[in-house]
Image (cartoon, rainbow, N blue to C red; front, side, top):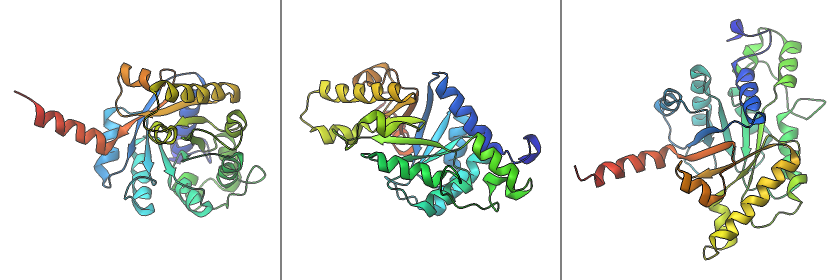
Length: 265
């Protein structure tokens, strides 16, 4: 990995730079949540041409060991992989980044303090308080040395994604999102927060508020839809989303099997 990159810079840094550049250019990136264990999941996602995957440590039975296995394989396949976490655990975030995560996606963000904590544990001093080691894939196992690795991290730090999925937040959305890479709408939890009997227009209005806040904060806008169709994106207000997570490996498998079972041929 280090042989094809400048000293200290690994494929993880290259993947971060590629995703960040595409998001800033306004490109649409499409990925899915990974909830199943096993090497084939990441391999299939890479072969299918997805732009990224998000390994789900919030709504799945995956443990950290399984997530690390997925990350190692994603690095080998050249597939950028983020990890969704339910809370900021400094040790866990550090281990996931060391294993090759290109970024961290934090669930249910309500306060500026949440995003400040995420940023602090994903950045080395003087920009954060992440603990430093070279004995891991993201550092190329230290072959290039500490100075080169820290320079690569400063140039291409982990991507940070905040999920907004409540009807209100404790701090103004632009303030909450500033300094991140993506403001992401968790549409399912948001719909529940608004009330399942709420008009679809209420969900779209809240999504539009998040989209406007990402513009103000000068970051990318993203969200989740169960399927990638024009109707699904329009219904969720995610037409402008540049960071789009579609379903999950389980949902895509279920949809395929359901289509097979319901086929009249």
